[in-house]
Image: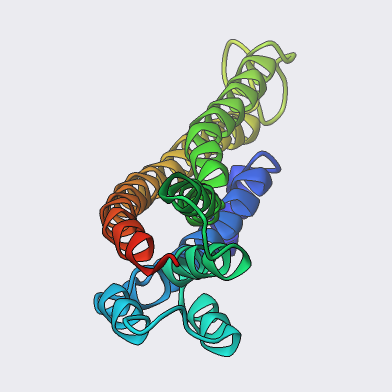
Length: 213
């Protein structure tokens, strides 16, 4: 592996950095986009059950908020009703929608960075290719003599230029393709969570409206 990095030259180092950052972001998103941390299946039913007799205590609301991302949305509805027991249904919906937008921003965290890496990696590979081609043409223009091929051009420099060009192109694609795949996967997963939270929040808003005094 180290010999490949040496053969690819300095242009591969930005790609190595992108690959490390991309891998770290992919692992982070896998950990934090689990259903149990975002939208637990039974959380809405449990929240409705504990509030059938009225708005739960602040301690219960705090536990709900710490449960998951969707728990933060539900907790915002309870807090609105705690602060103003006569809050209108429009106020409750506005509170849930505001919390939902914050939840959406939290779920989409780092996806922009993944998209940037997926877009930039092929360009960095192309940069390495251009640099390798410059080395090749530079060797072709060198004076003939000992260690040169007929017609000019040092074979060692030629080989190095070809290595830089090919290795950087290949590595750029190796970084970009899986990063793009995971970015699209996480985007689809986030969209699915947001749709689920929107539907559940609509049901929860009707429940909260029934708790008003």
